[in-house]
Image 1 (cartoon, rainbow, N blue to C red):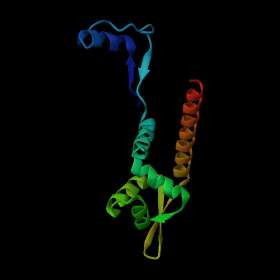
Image 2: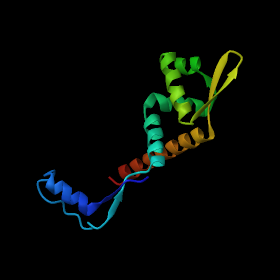
Image 3: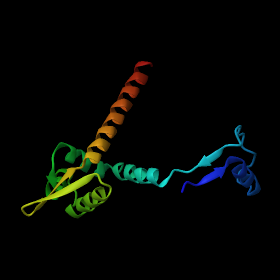
Image 4: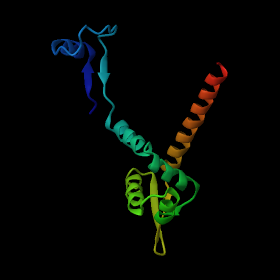
Length: 138
């Protein structure tokens, strides 16, 4: 269920509760505002998880090759239990999968994980290009 709010009612309540010192200059007070639905909230949780630098580094390493926890921990110079915790979290989000090979758990990205990493890298490239364009305009 999507939460909906009448902008007119929200403005009225803000004034009644004295949350603004002056009435806000909002033109379209007849609008109905909605909060994100649960699907978007889930996606935002995924973004929140991958925006933590160590977790994204894990994804980026797995983007290049399937790896066991011990190798990831060594490369990142982090504790194995922390890396295991992060991998469990990324697995719950559907970004990482695990396969047991002999006595090792080998982690790799799911298709969704590959898509997410590709999009983050594309955003980074677009940001770099935008920054270069802005610098060149100076």
